[in-house]
Image 1: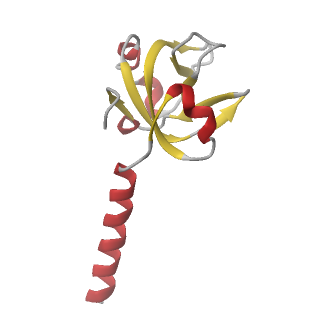
Image 2 (image 1 turned 45 degrees about the vertical axis):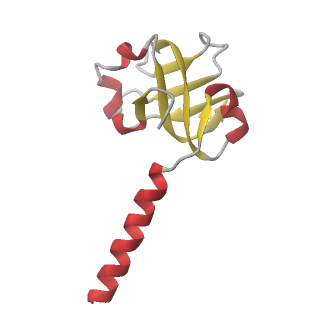
Length: 121
């Protein structure tokens, strides 16, 4: 049983170490990494919330011309995060898997841990 526990601990440590070493890419490159887990950095021009409660962190240009977006579902834990509006005008990083929605790259943000400040890890 001790050997199994040690193996499990090593496996979990490797998973954690891997998560910290995500490829860091610029928002303008995000579309090239669809389906991959990465960390995207860039300048946030706006944080908008639709009438239905869905929020978007738009990079480089306003919707619908954004180069990349962080997507926050209405009713999610992140939807009520009071820090979201403070991201506007800042350079941030968002980690996660890039999906292409309506021809634009985005990452679903479900945890505050996915958002970090600055371009360098």
